[in-house]
Length: 141
Image 1 (cartoon, one colour):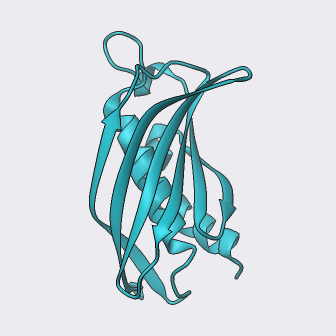
Image 2 (image 1 turned 90 degrees about the vertical axis):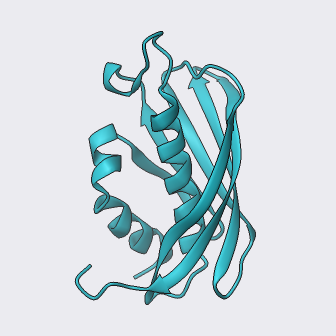
């Protein structure tokens, strides 16, 4: 199974991403994009994308970026992450980009960037950092 297939297979098992309507975008070693289309269910009271939805796709993008550099027989768990919401997120969709900053045997650190996209305009609306741990894959998954 290649990296894209391994990431897609795991992503497809995430109930929250399915619930939010998120989809996997670009997948390359060390970087993964997760897209979330605008719809009422992922907004807050003023019509912006909700911080929880924005943070959730950022967490998944970073986690899967780390997973691209992990051994095929392992899995990934978030240890911690911090995100700064830089501007209200409005657009046709938001796109989270997770990028590996420092891979490790046990812990890996990723950068998280979230962009609001409307037509040709991409605006950075959130930025953060995340630490992930490589764990043995669950045999039932």
